[in-house]
Length: 330
Image: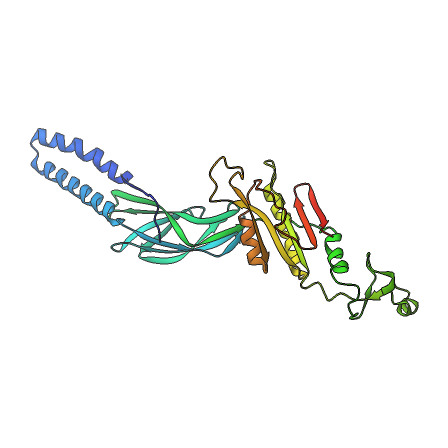
């Protein structure tokens, strides 16, 4: 648990302010009139006010908060944030959390529980603002603390999925060209563009009236595919682009492709004004949807250095704001 610089505030409640406004003038009048009984009552009221204020201020001294959430979530969804709140002594307070579904949660510290939080924007969430507010036992004064707490592990907020139709060549070409023509056939399949006429199984064509060929493919599983998401332009609608990219990549993963994903991420080692613009290429294989969500949550707008030579599979799909483009290195 790490606490960033915090705000600690103290204030009288409406009741406390009312007591102060009434008691101080009344006490002055009682002293001037020699009314000892009223003077005693006024002093007692002020002592209660000061005691309540001291209690409220010391109640939230040195709180300890630990926070954790899921690995990934999606923009616009709700996710549970687990809070473990501790204090030096038991205290009743109201807990507020940044972007929480409920504005305030009454609790008695120490307490551990989940808070529903809105994922308002795509990105990597690694800290959260947590507020604590407690009043004195009489309710005349209140103390509040606002802390920014590091999460135990970052929450990667991925973009919403936007359905998209993949370019047909992105599905056909790797299947029909990645394997050598002298592979032993493993069966028959319908004819697809690019098949060799030598593989047509004429006996089956004569029998069924349908063009079929000897299947020399070993299945799509294992086919390598480079997918590059270009976010170079400053006017790029990143939410739209990444939503479409997520839909396309999920389809390709489901089909069994081995995907080498190339994205642009913020470069923590770049200073403002560097040629890279504070951005770098991130290149890595995808094996599941969780990894996809993590990668898409980190994408930024930027133009890093030249990419040539960094990737090299036979098939390549480039995702740009103007559309998808199929490329081949053959």
